[in-house]
Image (cartoon, rainbow, N blue to C red; front, side, top):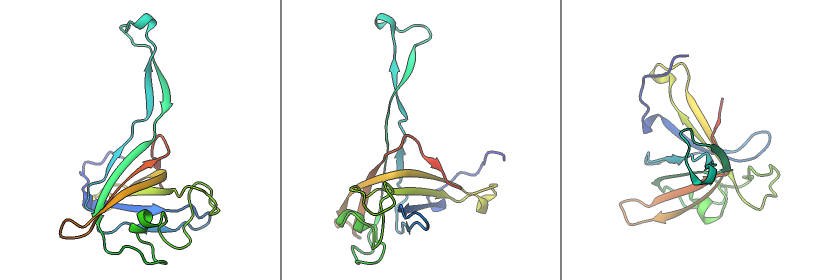
Length: 170
């Protein structure tokens, strides 16, 4: 398949949280997002192995410790908490998204830490690409802020994906 020549925009992107339920995972498509998603993928730490502190003409580089990915996004708040419905603000207020959600860390509901997969889908076929595009930031933990200083209540989320690189979704 040839590389796409169509530039992708925030209107082509869908953000989804997915839990760790083994057979049929629960999902929440994030509505009212601003389109300001940023993802930092640092990979492995690169360690220079310089002999006696001298950088050779061909540097001696080695891979060091893995570094987790980080990300942030924001959007408008339509609801804060419902008790049964899937609501993004609940992730901050209750460390959960809705009734029955299970951490991706164990699939049984017994994990001490609530982690979710963060799936990013980008429309391609509607623009002539051979396929849509998608990737996953696995095992994410979240933090954030709620802000009512503008026209609408806003939620700003940041998080860490406890993986080195995204995985591809099919």
